[in-house]
Image 1 (spheres, rainbow, N blue to C red):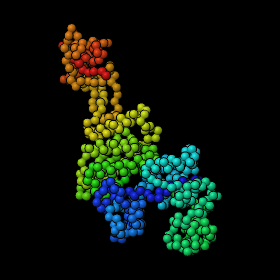
Image 2: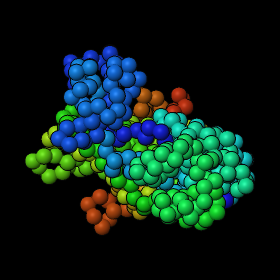
Image 3: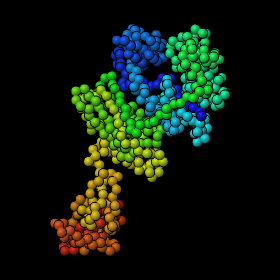
Image 4: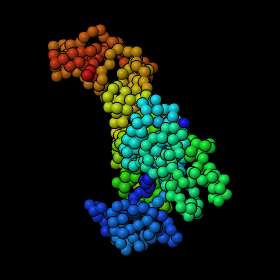
Length: 482
């Protein structure tokens, strides 16, 4: 077996939007902090470069950080959102291997031993993983080794050189610091008192002595990392539906703010779908309010897809006709039905792709104008042209009628034609071509007719669909051919 570990040193904290402290300054860059609850207040967990240059450090109280900078962007850490993010990334990673494991310390494990040949070797596979995650704005480090722990530890320490053989694991982990061990702080302190700084010294110690002094977990970790003991892992099983929520620090009151929340949620949805070859045709956005029941907004895309930019184009059209019932404190995106998309072209060329783009256009029009305003035409088993059609939803199948040639444009009401030199006239003289198509129908209701239909042509080359009433011999125009 061969494991590829993906470590995210700073997993994006799924919060939106940050709390601003100080005067608004859209053009200026603010120091950014990640804080966690600590006692009755909040404590700094992470800082960006600007905040660190001002003397703000992890472990400092937030009140102390305000003393050093009066304008801050503050992000609150939310472990539940981090767990959701890792699950989404695990679903994305399923495109490379059927065995993905969510590991400790913001790490994903991919068992790649059986898929290297398919992807053209390890370098190509690593390139695909790094490029794909970079598109989502994620910085990662990768480790490759025959055991999950060795791959994880090397990824956490930024050791990118691949270890392909079990007999090479010893030197591969020996140089790593003791900090990679997932052991209690008390155990770390005890190892430090022994003068140990790297795993090489720990590996050489007798396992029995380590077990008596630090517990059985430590020697078992070492044996699992070196491949001397089994290390069973539960593979990630993706859910059969997608649901993600954003709990906001302050409510969304404008459609612009709602659109920004939707962008983040659709990015997550695209990440979830892309790894499994799936798409969605309809999603629901649930908005939780304070004093009234949650409101629901359904967004339809015409055809199944998985691109966030296409989802957003339809949502923006939908929001043109939408009003927030009240400020929303939580926004949830729900996709109940997932559709298989593998093998379907998603590009801009080809008949199928062109049809998908047309369906997306229909979805955008429906979102902007309302579904009732965008309709197709379906046939009805009826010979009378006025009654041989009905409104239908775009894409609804419709069988062709077993009748003669029909024009693409049928007038709402037939228009009576005058005669000039005993020929029907419509801005030009019309000459009938071919044999007449006789329609006699409707004797059982009030729409009885007896007509002879012709395809007529004028000197301009334009083609018309005309008919002559068999009882009055009057001529009528009923449609135009393209």
